[in-house]
Image (cartoon, rainbow, N blue to C red):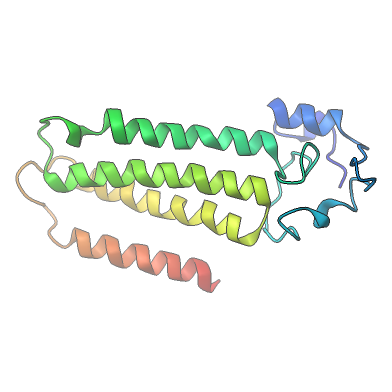
Length: 177
């Protein structure tokens, strides 16, 4: 595929790679449009493809700049789990809120891993590994915000069951459609 001009791309390393590799020929002799579906992960099956040219630097990583930049989410999640999580201290938050902070940071880490998988493989399973944690992170953030001010007990005792039901329903709908 023609990666376009740098102005059509999102900028940064992706724009440089897209502009600097237009017309690039793969070391095995494939043209930039024919080798795409012959790489390590098989056919490109994701419904999204970003502006970064695919499989230019490696047969294993479709979009290296996007893959590497996704690792920032992994780092942020791990910092949250091990350093910034209020459950590590004696804060005023209820146990539920502390657990939800942990779940938020854990799902943020999962978003980073999933996004890395999507950009590295451009497969449908990589896309699911990217998008499902985003859905779960949104639910975890909302749940945490709803109970953030609780100090002794849940203000909404139905919340754990509702979170589980909404999460299961959202993931089911995601895979159904």
